[in-house]
Length: 488
Image (tube, rainbow, N blue to C red; front, side, top):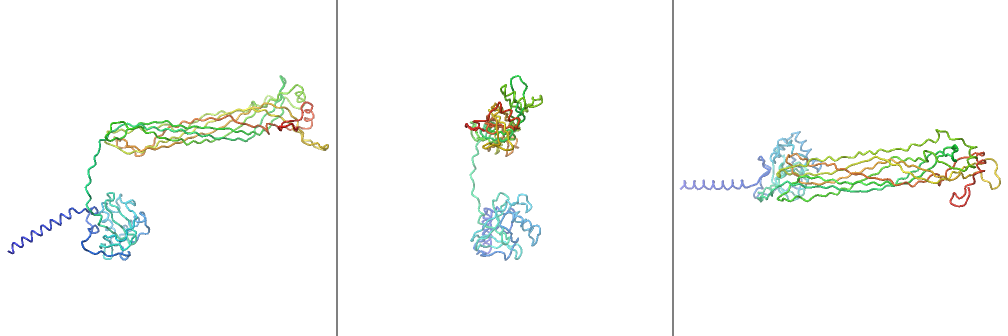
């Protein structure tokens, strides 16, 4: 009888042992890469200790700020000091979560997330009243904490409390994950796809010029020698427009991964507007024909003027050089990276950035002609008769005067468009980011200027008393130059 009872007890022990072993094998423990007392299941029937405050038994010490960087730096500092055997305990915790320890390159600030544990959360709370021990506890209120994820992208995690630096683990997450169905993976094929980048933009700018220019006044009369009246400094104002157009027309063929399809992928059309800028760097005005304005006068007028003015020397009134411009283009050229090719098994997401940039430096010369009136001005000194004014004017005639406006300018344009594709990458070294230069075509034009010369198309020259009296015999007072019949 006694022998049978012993046999029965032995069988029961074996059965119980098998049952307990089976339960332990089915229990999922993702945070137990190495055994550690923190990562234990919830105790059956044990009442947790209620925690309404922290700090009475700190483990790794209080953390100064509720940020990932503050927690990471704090653990590193505690680890280096190695007081209270903290170095070994920190390494053990991290090794249980798959790291090699605190110096594992994978353990960074990105592994730590500031969080707040709500009241009622139960789990194992660390302390250091008698070494690194862990007690079954429940949060009496919410506490700030830091969530540390395991190395395998966070399949499990542990908390470090901000107030005391104590480790905390909630075993309720330790459940056996449901089996996931095997996803169907369609056949991968490499097919070509065309990417077209296009854009067109236009800009118009009005430019104003206010300046002065010198012109030589030259009297002519048939075959008689020319007479030089001198140089006049003439105010000039001009207005003209610059229009610029920037366009892109670029295409590229790449091989992309397709899944279970034999049809060529639809073309991709990217709109890429051109950002344009126009900058006028210089504007110069040249007056007259070769720097001279010709004043054709009558025989009588020529005889009077010959008494006052000298014949023009050969080196007088030489032509003012009109500048010439050479177009300079400093934009990018197309640098097309070779399309990645593959065998349908190597696929990679690649973001292509299509960038364009172009700049042109150029210039243009525009001409205009105006009818201007030359006015001789004499300021009488001494006594004046009743009603007489000191300013006296003679109208020396109206003559055509040419003007040339030379302008230098820069035109620039930039553009940018992006597209992400799953490309074929046979070699396995295609970059995740690829910059592709696209050419920008720049066109521009300058309108004919609107120009004003002189003071309301009048040029004044100074006369002395002798010149005024002599010229008065053949030239009269200026009337109607103000737009009415009033005489100057």
